[in-house]
Image (cartoon, rainbow, N blue to C red):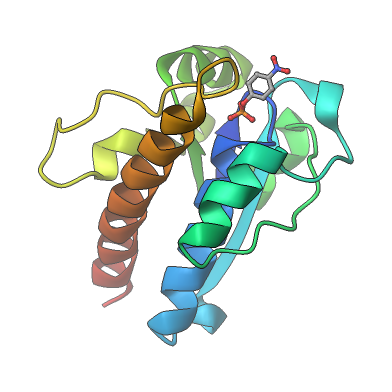
Length: 159
Ligand code: 4NP
């Protein structure tokens, strides 16, 4: 069992996208029993909300249904409950590193684009909130690439 938490700022654009795409990949691979997947935001201002309408619309065009509700990242519970805590951008990673209490917790932190192939294709998943529609397409391109790499990493460590 691998427990994965995707983290961004608001939990209404990037991390719910990552959650839905990863769940879809895992389902297609027939590996649902092996994964627990969730997402959270470092900023709690959107807690309880559905994902951003633009994110939902762009994701739906690619066949992903985004219906999770935003929640805040809870350091004490989430560092205990998850094996991999995956931040979307460098700002998320700095915040997560500050919240980690020890080396065990720090070792659970990963940057989403580190799973992309080829490596270093993208440096982070950029915040689309104040960008145009193409920002959401770029986010989805990066998330599809990174989740495929992440699935491979998880399945190869299962063996
Ligand atoms: P997310 O996008 O971190 O990908 O969910 C954002 C959502 C909301 C805000 C910023 C980024 N905000 O400033 O409210």
